[in-house]
Amino acid sequence: YRKAEQLNFEEFIQQAVLGKIASEVYNEAKKIHPLRKVEVFKTELLKAPILEELQLAA
Image (cartoon, rainbow, N blue to C red; front, side, top):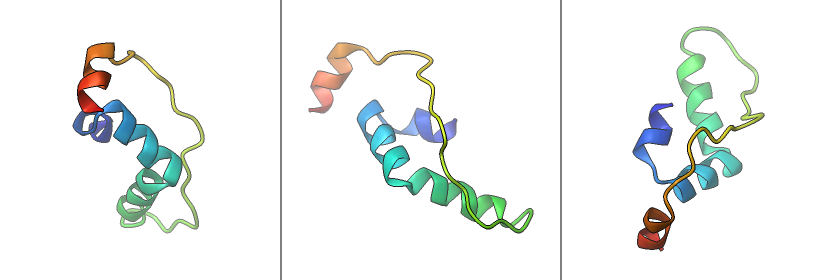
């Protein structure tokens, strides 16, 4: 959730698809319990970005 607040929409989607977010979750979670693999299975859009924000980012 914090990562979504820090990045704009396009950056967040790119990191989710490329696996960077899953990698960061894995690195933090393995400190608590041994893991083999972490993947982002599904993302849900709770609030659509404003079109003006997307145009400013481009």
